[in-house]
Image: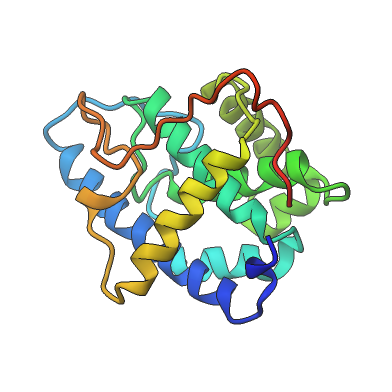
Length: 202
């Protein structure tokens, strides 16, 4: 999208996404004390010292992927959260989920992208771990990587609206699942008609 190519748009979008994910992670950190949750390959033994904001800034700076990849990565994180309710996004897994979702989005969206070894360096992990994370993420998504234009615009429009409000995102309003049995009110319906098979235009 042309709007995303504007140099003033992406820094604001990255900041907003970081804030949103921070809220979701903190909420799930509290919920995990009362709800059973699985431990996955995305979980670290301790919380990373780098903040979500700085980590996403680092990915944005060095991944050199198209801006649309960050919207698609956001869609993937939402899908993953909905399909894996026992693996909610929290402070122990959000960083690995971020680097993996952006890498998978770049591979699917861009004609040219860096390999797993490069993304591992950007993410501060080993290549072997990056490989494992990619496989687990793909299975967690059920290999549903296609994002229709309608879905893309729905997620991007949501982010635009929230950014224009100029206030911190509320967890209750985010599209990311908190691992609860009920879907959040703003989870998007990705079912499109059979006539909308065209690939996402970037």
